[in-house]
Image (tube, rainbow, N blue to C red; front, side, top):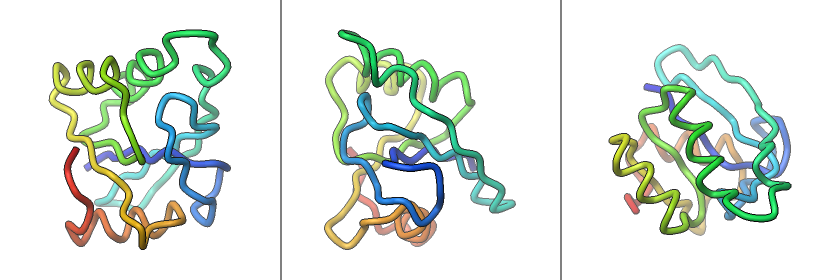
Length: 111
């Protein structure tokens, strides 16, 4: 399964970023192979429509799920249309690696 996590930096040890559309980075993780990649979120600098542009990036990456602290209505609508499941960070999750671990253990609530 391919998941994308909003992050403040480009490493698994990075802090998570609660802002989906304005997150600095996205970490793409294949939960079956544990291979991952980091992508700078080019949509973060847009004056408007960052959530939609970021959502399109996630869709283009063929993700099955996305994990963040919050999703705006437009990004949420795009994910629902693309059948991408949205998960929320919990208080225990502060790093990307913790988000991955909690996701694998089905401990992240669905948005």
